[in-house]
Length: 297
Ligand code: SF4
Image (cartoon, rainbow, N blue to C red):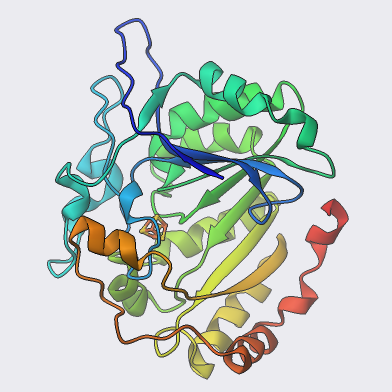
């Protein structure tokens, strides 16, 4: 059940830390182990051509915790990528304090057996890293399993992000990392940004031994060639922390949202992959060999 949040809550001056949440889902089954309470944060700097949640793109407008173009890289969006997400016409969201959001999630705690817990997705949750860290800190103070579903786009080894990310990792059990294309130039074309810092994030998580599940949306004609899948296989197999590698079929479920928002859909001519294409991709990526996740299921 996706409970869209239609009304923006007003924030008060005595609430220093607020997070903008697009929507929540009470019983997620695929975004981490067990049953998960899913939270979709508002705002994303990427412009993935296959995005099925373009209504999460718009950056939240919280004057107490402003997200700047420096944080998001939106200054660097390539000219052919529309900036519709920031024109204010496509989204609604609600501000929560970390405690409010945790109280909301905790109502479902009795369902979080077998490794279940909370997954934060988006949008791009790392844009609201201060709020996210405090939210996960609350969850971990009660031994709740925490998973972060991220594109990795905001990652940098520069301060202040680096220090904040180190803090966040103290309270994060699992990262679901989307690798959308292994080639930096093709990644730029597919998402509006290069993947260099995203691959760097994967390597950093390997260095610190943080468990990750990698997900790769297979888009025929764009990232499913033998060359690209072999390069992706080579990269992922060099990491020491991959518990699961999933190939997800490109789908067109999000197209109605693009149309409703008045954004031209760039992959009109692309069909979802066939069963054979998916099987081949799984074989080339050796997805069966990443079994670490099974201990949690
Ligand atoms: S990172 Fe996720 S939310 Fe952002 S544009 Fe890509 S698919 Fe959409």
